[in-house]
Length: 552
Image 1: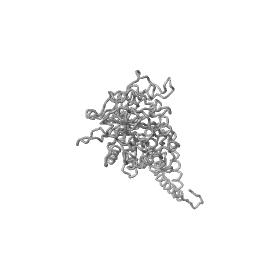
Image 2: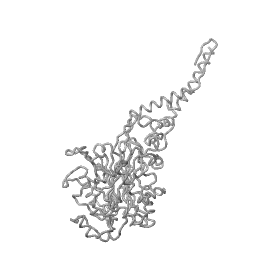
Image 3: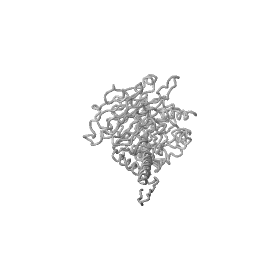
Image 4: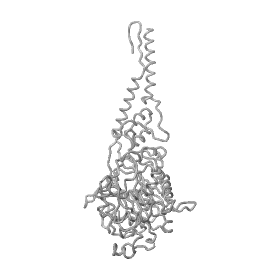
């Protein structure tokens, strides 16, 4: 009887020891809490399919802009989405094990075609019949279209103080929609960048102040009945005086688009209490499936003086560092309150615009190197394909000039656009052209050249501007960084409406969709493996009584 009592006491003690050990892996009470301010959960069955945005301090360190051409830093580095989702797991051991799991086991990928373009329109209103299809070429049927403008209005004092001009944006939006959806000019819907709020309009925080708002508009069709191409709808837009960005997606992608935010930063004339928006940047951040993306359009400081390149780099830091996308005022669907987002929170980001960087080389040398260099629209499209023979030959042709390119020099010195990438430039300088022609300004007689290239005089040529004789430069650029993003093309169009040539770039962005059922299975298997490992590591004891019975 005494030996049986001793054996029972030993078993009770062993069970208590095992119970404490099991609590360490979350089987009983005593699990560790998730980081402060983050919703903690392990059961993904009711997961809202949303990605937490936790601010630049915690996410800016993720591997954006480094590594190979795909943008992903290392095969051994956990995917940023994995890191973000891991912060919402309560148990630290489960959280640590989850980070090591391949993201492919619980997500589905969607390769999205993304077209991005930038154009300084020289403050000129577009003809209603303007055809921009050689620039905004959607023959590849991109899923996302991002169009950025600079000087969409003249930078006069009156326009600068207004910050918004819905007439100008409406004219360009109509042209964009006609190009995307093929609608006749008279029947083209003209989206208004500052329409009164509707149930589809999302304005967040103080961003409703002058400077623009983001909009989400309903789609009615996913394909065009006549062309069998996708029908595009605008999901966001933002204006800051002459800087304007507008984002369009297909109907199918719109159904997977959420958390649309817009913001701006002015870097123009300093009035002491505020900065004017004659220069600055606008941005749109949105999430497609579970992948946050950000698009920034900027117009940096002009000038060809000694310290002007430094001012442009300062403008970049001001925009990149201060562009803040306000959080929605209400809690998200899973009960968490979002924080403001920043450019660094995006897993794929594109920075485009008239960056205004010039060449540190004499005007005569530049013009001599570019003599006779006038590619046709077809040649420009061919040269834009990254990695092609035509593109590489063109880049070598401009190597002597690009060695003096201020943007490349500033990046190499680490003074601007650190972590961002730009494909090799394989197109001629985009500025400054005589409007209506393919000739750089400041060379020939104004009237003779205008009549030769534009007999109908549809574009007015300014003799005053011609006398400025700006040295040709690659002012208009597209840079990018991120994970799961690959650049396909980078080139320019040969439109003559402005003194700038428009630039474009195509990307493939792999958007990831969380699969809650698969994720639940991964977590359950992770728990089972941890439990087994914990049990195997526990001490074992044997109890023997005088009668020969053995208890384990």
